[in-house]
Image (cartoon, rainbow, N blue to C red):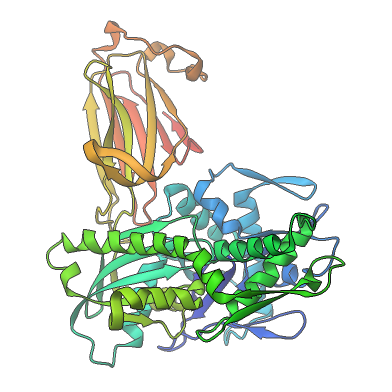
Length: 513
């Protein structure tokens, strides 16, 4: 059994490979209803935790608390990051693994899959295009620990591009076409420009926002309700969660001709009645966020225009993601780009379908991804007077295919200090003089002993970094590798003294030799 799995902020979508077709997998809830998504939800009470369908079944039970949209936490988390869940403190990796274990069980017990799997199901998995190395590693590792045979990991908008090509394969699509994918999910936004030649797809560039999605529109609507109720009616805790659920349901029920929203206050404790709001006021409150997505899309399109004639030949803007059904989104895009805007017939599952197609070896699609952020290190220049950012893997660097060797970069030098203090950064953009800006993710700081006398000291951060002429005869080598998933490993070695240390993702993977 081969699957495409799009782990989403509010909903997780799954598509299956079935003899050249890629049906969306549906799930049966404990109440007997059938739905084409799996809730990305955790319920907890004391030390007990429930996930997915079982968690959603507890939404009206007052003794249960809930963790929603936990995918959003991955963008700022390290592998050792922990959360207080009920009476226990658990790492985010453990929580994600438990969620995916339950998803795997429910795929066998509560889905319409034609073929059930006693062994490890094979899956192509998705990740936001602007995900940093931590998020990619956490996602990949959690799927593996949950018992999935991970075939590969593809950026979600790239997967949606494959779904587009498959859906329109029999129409009059040009043999060579440039398209932009506008992917607005529950918690993230991505824009990618893709060059397609038959079944060969190459990502030209990507841009995105790791903390913007449908959840934020729900918050805006809930804030409008609270303002209407006034300060004398405070809403917090569990009541706030129920209000957000009600706002999400009403937002998702909107269609282009809706003129008002009626929020049922019965969802909040002992309250009764309703709050009526105009959709025009709601849309106006959401416009600043939508403008941010439009700016990110424009950034990607302009960058693609600088590469050959990519942007100039851009024929399609493909609208996908669970939040793309929000009417003001499509309206705003069409105001700017007119008839070039096409909405996926399966907006909430486009990425999952594309992932399933990519998992099918007989489909014949080839995808070349690019590094979606700048990775580098701060270095001292001008005798230590200036701190400058040194990009090691620039954004839009072409990534290797799954079976190809990792990208490598090696630096050799003779040190001037007793200890190397490495401050690595991933960022979405660089401004003048190669300074990071936009979304920036610092790694934990790494200290490496240039002085061989310190190579066994475990607390280098407590030792002052000083110039030491005696270490100038040591040869230091920095070796950087980036694999097909965009995950980076760093090895720093003293070649003269014969010792090295390797780091992946905030010092959680460390070897000495």
